[in-house]
Length: 204
Image (cartoon, rainbow, N blue to C red; front, side, top):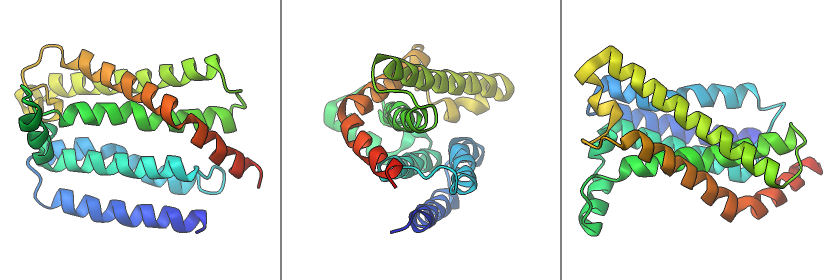
């Protein structure tokens, strides 16, 4: 399957997901804010398709992350049904779907940043690459928390669904920690597979 076909397939899946999640979202403004990364990333992927073709691993992870965002946008993160099931199963105090979202916020960008730094930045594998990837992921997380802060200041109580704090005063810190855990997990478990796929692309 060619890169254009793969990107077209991802686009089709995301369009269906956007239509499904945006049909009757819990809160329309929250939906727009939650799916905004999808609406930004998809045009970028098409614009860069000739200069930078992502590995299959990166493209699959990007696709899954987009679906996680759409599901969170449809229900708001604090109300995703799957999160309630996990909450009941593990006897948690809150719906953990937001934690999953921030785990993915580290897990997926870690491989994307790693790929960019290796293929475009010509960095060798090692401690410096790992440190830069983790720093980039935490920078993304911090930026997102600042966006949430701006939304809270601008919208007041109307930002509650977007923030998804569920009454936790340490929600921001937990969000960034989950992002870091996600990034470390991705690097620890997928780096070898990722390297093989990068080698396959650069050898063409």
